[in-house]
Image (cartoon, rainbow, N blue to C red; front, side, top):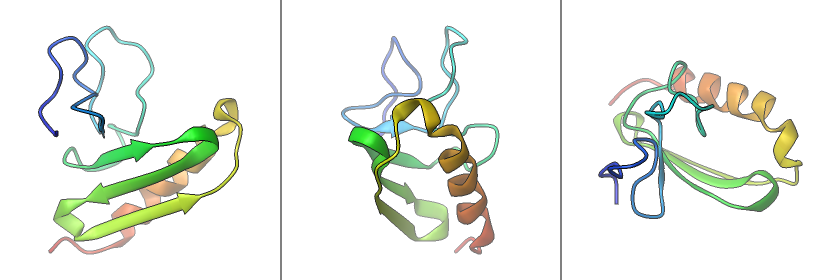
Length: 87
């Protein structure tokens, strides 16, 4: 599930990966701000499950934020992950 798709490096098998897209389009997660091993299941209106294996951390958000307003949420998520020590 965490193996990048041949056509989209930021997507695995039903999971988003914290990587830049080959075509240069906007990343789905936060590759310049968080660990490269982070992966996520993303739902509607900002609901997500994000996993950082190197931190032993899983974050679940059951929020309700329009998709075009999620950039600040992602920025804070990257900061939250980096606040935890690596295991």
